[in-house]
Length: 234
Image 1 (cartoon, helix red, strand yellow):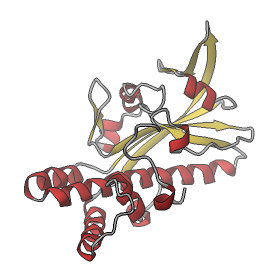
Image 2 (cartoon, one colour; image 1 turned 90 degrees about the vertical axis):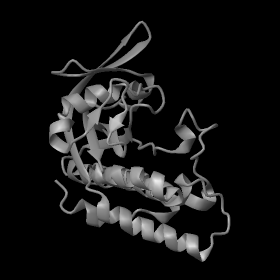
Image 3 (tube, helix red, strand yellow; image 1 turned 60 degrees about the vertical axis):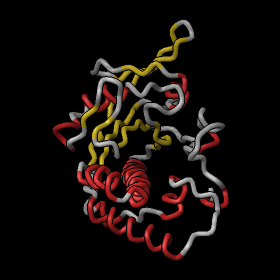
Image 4 (cartoon, one colour; image 1 turned 180 degrees about the vertical axis):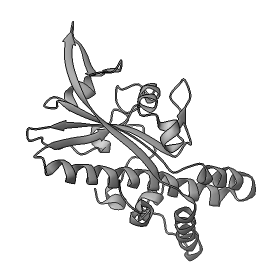
C-alpha cells in the first residue's frame, strides 16, 4: 500500500486547464487565483482509495474473435485492443480507485451556488483521480521490476473497443464496494463519479511501453479534451 497518497498528488494545473477546455486564452489574475484556490480545496476534500489484484490470463483467437480470459474467474474481455496490448503478457492487474463521495457532494452543491467554481473543482477532481492512478501504476512498476517483470500502459473500459460495461465485472471481482466504497450501475457508470477502473498487463519479457495518449485513442478526432502540445508538452 502507498502511504499518504494524498500528499503525493500535485493536481497539475495544466491538466486542470485542459479539462476546462483552455485553448491558450489570456487568464486574468482573478481566474488564476480561483483555480489555485480550487486545487487547494480539492486536495482538502478528496479521500483517495484504491484496490488492485493480479490474475493469470489466457488468450484465445476463435474465428477471428480475440478474447482474453482471467484464469480462476468467469471474466473475459472480448477486445482486440486488450488482446494486442497483452500480446506478451501472462498476467493482468485489475485496478479500481476513487476519490470518495465528499468531492461529489461539493461539486453537486456548487452546481446550485457557484457554477463556475463547481466546474473548476470538477476539473481538479478529474486531474486528481488520474494522478492517483499514475502514482499507483508507478509504484506497481517499481515493485515488479525487482522481479524482472514489465508492465503495459493501463487501459480502462470505455476506451477503444473495450465496453464500459466491463466496469461491472472488474468492480465486482475486486469487491470494490466493500474495499473502497466504489459501486457501479448495470451500464458501467461508477459511483462516486471521480473513480477509475483499469487493466495493466504484466510480462516476464521486455515490453515496448506504449504510452496512453490522444494519438492512440479511437475518439481522438472528436474529443473536446484532446491534449494540445502547447498546453501539455506531451
